[in-house]
Length: 244
Image: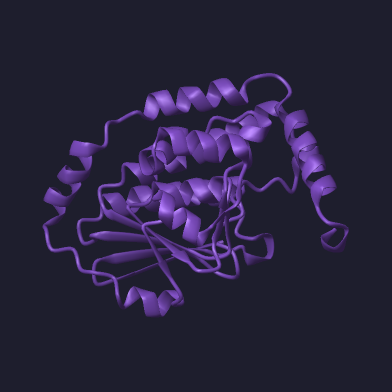
């Protein structure tokens, strides 16, 4: 589910649910939050890297058991996603996301939270949560691409190719390399850890309470499960017959 490896000041977190596109179920979200928090207090580390096994970085929130859960449980799970994103956004280390295939929904939010955002050339990005009423990760996306571009990306529901994500600033670089080869090109951190953490803190106002409140307000609106079911039905209906 989640593999953790460390060497030479790096900690690498590998999402390992390739059969479901590395979608975030509750267990994986909590495990990632714990791993990010633990890395943040490990003084031997300067960089935290997120990557994934298989074709896709992360296809979003795992909805495989949607028929069996109700609004309250969905709200709790989305809160855990927000807590994960906040932990990553405020992690005192240099954070890196290496994404290929789909980085959609919560996966796109994970990608946007990182300091270095490396999009493999086959990457695509999409933020569909707003289509079932969620306000999740919005301010962090806006900090990457600007308020106007974030609003357009969210409200138009566009799927962004790697080149488009790079042009917007959602991705910080694009690569044709596989992860191990790309990792060899990663520049070293040349300032000591406390200074690096201070630089991040100086430019990143702590808005965790506001972000969590915005998410809870949106997810607590009655009918969350039905909105997600309607979204899924619309997506299936929109697929070409050949891909059904």
